Image 1 (cartoon, one colour):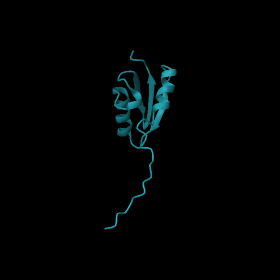
Image 2 (cartoon, rainbow, N blue to C red):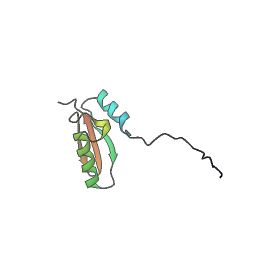
Image 3 (tube, rainbow, N blue to C red):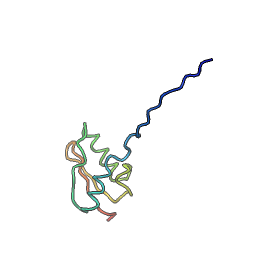
Image 4 (cartoon, one colour):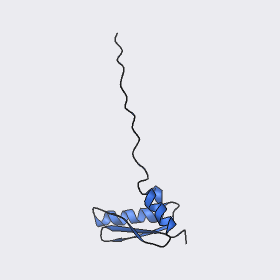
Length: 83
C-alpha cells in the first residue's frame, strides 16, 4: 500500500472586518460623515446602512454607535458614540 503525502499551502483566511480602518477613522472624527461604499443596487445600499446602524457589520459595533443613510446607491456613515 502506498501512502501519498499531501502538500499543504497555508494562507490567511478571508478578511472579516474589511471596514475596520474606516470605522476607526470615524471614531477619531465623531460626527463626520464618510462614504462607506457604493452598492450595486439601492435596496442593497439601504440594507448595508441598516446593518451599520444595528451593529450587524462587525466594524460598526456596538450597535447604536454609528449612524448611516443612503444617497441613491452610496452608503454614508458617521460615528455618534451612542448618543
